[in-house]
Image (cartoon, rainbow, N blue to C red):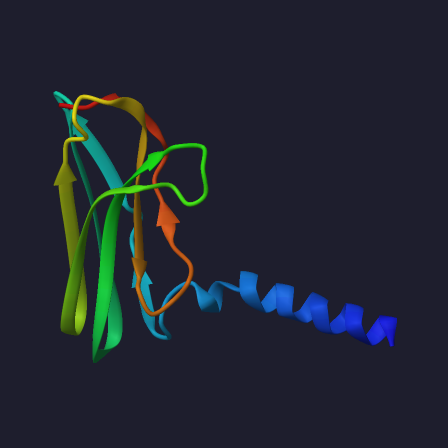
Length: 123
């Protein structure tokens, strides 16, 4: 019984980490981009799908607060029926100095892509 349970648990772990779970079937996304100038932050990314279906593609700016989950400073949803998705969001965070990063994902799937973290003194 223990061997069967180990195999079942091992398979579920592999399935969760599988690249097929990263995006809806037939969809890809680029690498999200994070930029800032004079404390004003912007994050953006795009996604492409082979079939035209209504989906939501989201981009967020998040603050690395050493907590789980990190707070979302700003987000934008591209809710669209089509094959090409683009989302961009911009924000200040009230003069706070912290580490920030961009995140993008299709909201129908649990995995996401993050940028590197950047220390920013916001406007």
